Length: 289
Ligand code: 5GP
Ligand code: ZN
Image 1: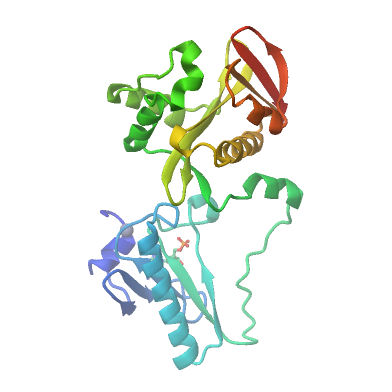
Image 2 (image 1 turned 135 degrees about the vertical axis):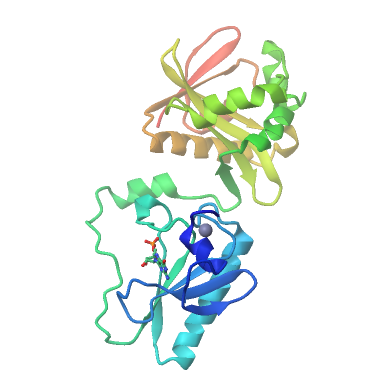
């Protein structure tokens, strides 16, 4: 990438003391002179950090990190290594090209490579409940180009049968994607939250969302599992995930107005929602998160 110092080092436009190079990665001495043997391992393709780096490249980088670490300890008189990485400016990243720092270590070398933290501000359980993950199902922000899945979800008759009272399927043509994306993903104003549910094996399986409804002044949840993936407890896991994420985002009470004949009512009851009121068309569920 133009203007990236590490990209310039990779193509030889800037000098470096190259320690190792293969097809996908390169390692060179860090110029900081802060500790003996400070090495940087970087992918040749430009990624900002671990957050946008694809997993194959990440694997290549880590293979190189291990190769160099073994070389340092087996051949160069070191006993161990510290691996350091800052991903994002918030974490102290100063060069926006993904890199892993290797700091070679000797027993009793007197180096303190562990960051000095300020002490935790919140209870460990509170943070745990916010960040605990489901190994099979993840929650991802769709890219604009991924909105074909939302289109297929909303246009699937069986999936949308719960919505029959309101017309069943919903058109989501490509012309509408950009406007929708700007509103829900880019400019969400903390009033709109939208994620795809992704099964690690199958791919996208549904959506979870909530938004603040200005008219009734409540946060309203939304969860749709594609019909072909129902009956496997995914709705339950998705709803639990949604409640946890809403709570993590500072929302106290989540509502959902589902069609009175929607069989998913039991899912909400099972997850601690209580019926606040019902009309002949809808049941309004409420949960204190
Ligand atoms: P970060 O703060 O992003 O984790 O680390 C960036 C590292 O890159 C720093 O340790 C810094 O010393 C190193 N660095 C910055 N510019 C150059 C350069 O032009 N050449 C080399 N070899 N290292 C650099
Ligand atoms: Zn770069």
